Image (cartoon, rainbow, N blue to C red; front, side, top):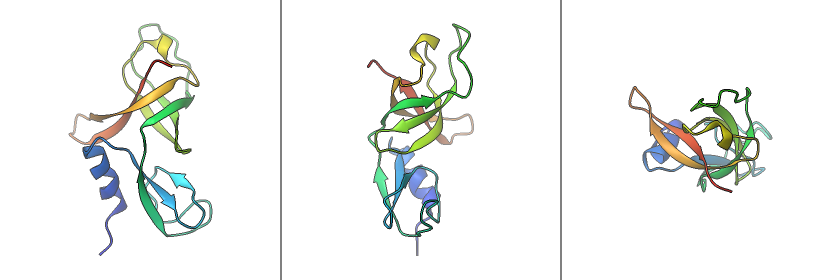
Length: 122
């Protein structure tokens, strides 16, 4: 019986890891849980563990208020895939395109886990 991909992803978060899928046909890497590769249509994946290191690739809106503590960003992981995720509460001057980030796992109000990225010193 095949393991539910969402379960593998959630299990990784429970262990403080960000797991992602790599297509065995074309080697495309992606974090979204998928049954078919968006690049080649392949259906054979292997799960890999991300280092959790990356950089802010894009910010959907400007970080304006100096006291704004949390925002969402597109993060590009060192493994080459991008994902949208929240940034950990941090001072606005630490949030810019290209800023290095490190994975943390946060628990939501309903008890589920989500990836969170904290800007770190360059």
